[in-house]
Amino acid sequence: MKIKVADYLAKRLYELGIEDVFGLPGDYNFNILDSIIKNQGLTWINSTNELNAAYAADGYARIKGFGAVVTTFGVGELSAINGIAGAYAENVPVVKIVGVPKTKFIKTNALLHHNFSNPDYYAFEQAFSNVTETTTFLTEENAKEEIDRVFETLVRTKKPVYIALPVDVCNHLIEDKIPEIRIKSDERTLNLAVKKAAEIINSAKNPIIITDYLMKRFRLQDEVNEFINKFNIKITSMIMGKGLVDEDDPHFIGMNHGILADVDFQKAFAAADLIIGFGTLFSDLNTLAFSYLPDDRFKINIQGNFTEIDNVKYENVFADDMLQALLKADIVKKADSSTVRKGYDVVEISNNPIKTDEIFPIVQKHLKENDTITAETGIISYPASKMNLKKNSNYISQTMWGSIGWATPASFGAAMADREKRLILLTGEGSHQLTIQEMANLFKYEIRPIILLLNNNGYTIERVLSNDPNDSFNDITSWDYKKALELFSGKKSDDKSFEYFSVKTSAELDLALLKAESLQKEKLIYIEIFTDKDDVPSLIQQSVNNAKTRFGA
Image (cartoon, rainbow, N blue to C red; front, side, top):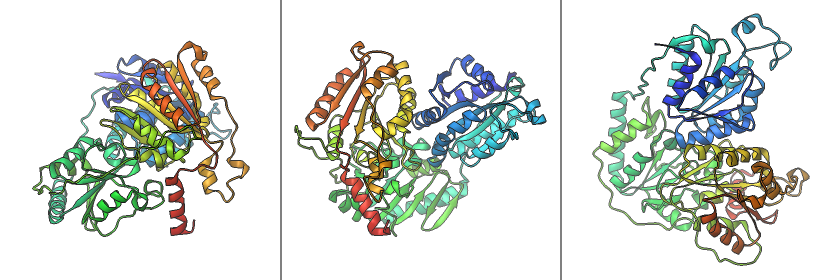
């Protein structure tokens, strides 16, 4: 059976499990949008700008598995490129689709809008080739083959891909059969890796697993949790992997904050005689300024498409195959099942001016099962990662790329991916101002998050890192966020579409979160927390001090 290229592309998106497609219309992508709207399984989401659309698709993919964003040629796609670069940095599989001018204009190098005065129709694909796993520029001759190739790459690598689709090629007819994507490890190499890994695990008395972000991207949450319970092995998580493991599970010993972690964690970690890595990334922000780096106990390193054991690399061994094979391997169950105190201790509630170190223990107190927590980069990400989550919670942050402003539209995307979970967004006013327009879609789609806005009068993380904390470039313009809610909701505060709280003490924050539990079912909750501009979370200050001690930075 024959089908239009644009219809086939929409069909492929839906086949991946994508139900919502983010982006903006433009005169070169109307045919693509028509196919998306026509597909009964897909919903088109008009974002407020292309960067927010890319961030939303990123947040959506972190929860749903895959995401998609559509823009127009040139101006639209370059506005989205930072969001796609962040997805590439963190292995978030997003399909970036761009509508481009008709083939006849490309062939004649016509002077059309959204291009340069010296036209180059492939310049933007070339730009995206640096921030995606693969790109393609579709023609009538290659459309079917190239779409199938690109989708296979997306599924195999869990990284973004780029598809340029000319207006006329949208309507070209191709076969509609979707090929089966079978991505399997080399069987012989897999067996060797599993055998060696099982031997090393069996020789250890007290192994510990460090899990991280790639286990999320390859959708291996169930396998990881089954593994630790079947073999009674302790586990910790890097920041990018937070939320992968049930944090109330006694095998979970807390977040791997290295030398900055609590004493109980450090004792448990020091007692391990084997460290097993599940999809780890030892970058600066993911390790709190390298507060932890692998030592000679780190003998098993399972990555997305290879495994390294005792410094021997086993290529073409995929993480899902490796974990599933290890679950069937002859591994002796470990005896130690001692628990470790984790998360924050209870803090005293008072009417004194609130400190940032008090915020996160209070938020932790009010967390529930089935929450989705989004943490912005900056001074929020480290202390937020220490909070102990309840069962079946999602936790997303952009720790590697660290683009401020990501969290607000990413939260919208995450909420669209799973509307059953309660959404909690933790952000700062500096980051929030970059992408606050996407609040309009939270209201439009009746998403009712709890938004905690940390207002500390500027870019506090930059104050910490600057030579002079009082440098004027770390100041930002003051906004009235309550009135911003009226702007983006299109309603007055007494119209009951949102509830605003101004918080200056720990008692006020505790009460606001308590009220939010019932109010959030009917309205968006916005809690603005005011702290001193020089008040820095201790975990941030410790990590900065650690970096200075180690590197003189």
